Length: 292
Image (cartoon, rainbow, N blue to C red; front, side, top):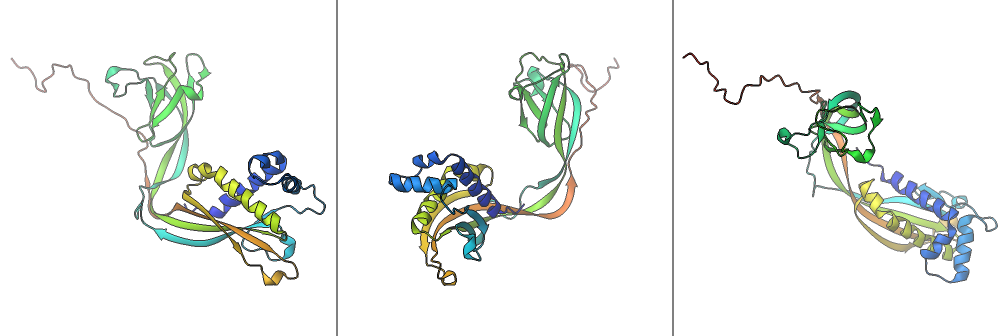
């Protein structure tokens, strides 16, 4: 998949601005500034100043002064790099199915696992949504089980009331087919510019923007896969086309690394299920017949 980073950034900025509008006193903990300027900024964020316009978050440059004040998201550069993943990934899941089956608890020393567990067919497992204890008719709590090996369909069972051989009903999703994909890394730099007709307001919004990206850095990594983030900033010259309106501009640059992938082959199927048909022989069986 190719991420649209502009979506991540605009949603994050809008969410944080909305939070500050509803909780303006939180700005006291973010910016160190004079009380008078702090009060003015909070009333502006709340929309209580006369003729206050909402702050717009846009892609690209604002086309006219009526769009100010705004925060503009611009792509400064994008460069492919091959430092990590190489040219090909391990394949991506293209389709999933939902299945509900009855399974048995396995809690034996020779089972290969040192914990009570169940083994699901239809691997690889995407998600286990529900497990029900058949004897009691009760749903297990989320903390009572864990998908520990999606490729082998192993689900650890932490509910101590379940013993070896007990029946449970499991609802889960699993992959049905996949596709080879080409995967690569990109170094990105985004310039996120604050545009207003007030110099003080431009500076203040710039620092609130810096707080926005710093406060959600972990989220941008864990959810949006934006790694190695680094911030920098600079003022930019006025825009002559806006005269006689004088526009103040300051930009926060976000440099980061992410990965993108595209399908690169025909779909292939996963193993749908496994059935074992094995004759169990006694431990002293030698493989031949006793004729004498």
